[in-house]
Image (cartoon, rainbow, N blue to C red; front, side, top):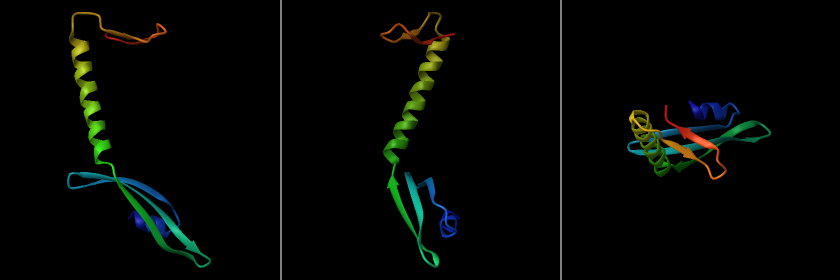
Length: 88
């Protein structure tokens, strides 16, 4: 489907998985005077990035659950005194 989009003259970017690996693919139409004659597509393995993102989401969820259920005040203040986070 995405290659058809490129064959119609539009670039595309897509993230997808194959097995336990994640890829980001960028495709662009290659054109000459007669129009689009091919599609150039490059895929990058982004498995490590996706796994890191999933770990951050899990860590944030654990922190949120812990901080929201403690009978104490939990806060995060920046060096300039700005309060970044305070539990409810």
